[in-house]
Image (cartoon, rainbow, N blue to C red; front, side, top):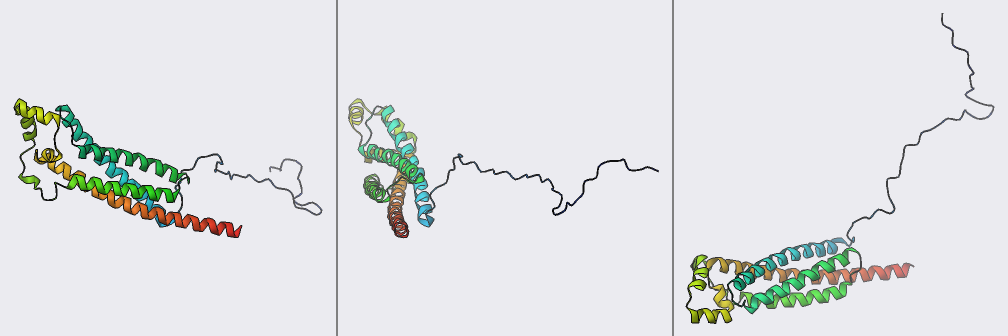
Length: 227
């Protein structure tokens, strides 16, 4: 028969207290106070609208810059001067996309003046209308399907007589460039449609900025009153 080994038995209770017990704490606070958190300002539906408008503006402006830059590169490669309409559209698009990027970074860090941004968006809205009007002026009644194939432009520039080639080299009108071939016509119409879309987007972003300015001003007054 096995007998329990002798040992010291500690009482579970003392005169007035229970025997102390050990507990293993396994909870750790995973939050790091120095960790950078990326989160847009919580400004409700107007904030979401502003973010959506900026994303759509960026996408449309990138497309306009790509198309116009390709047109100007092809014209310059053929030793011709690009039309002023294309140069103006490219200039406005580049300026606008730099503005869109900077203003959204400032908005993300709560450093953007909404009233000033509303005014600048309104100016870009007007500039977009002007560009859309100039780009689309000869396109409203133009049937691209009736134009020759895309090889016609290259053949025309390469086989033109010297007097005509010298005139074209000096300057090429926007209407002449649009009527060169079917592909150019469709691409220019795409630029026109994107310019109209940019007008609408800047109109909505202007209204969103005014709404955000009113909301932020109201919240600031409420905090000052409560303080």
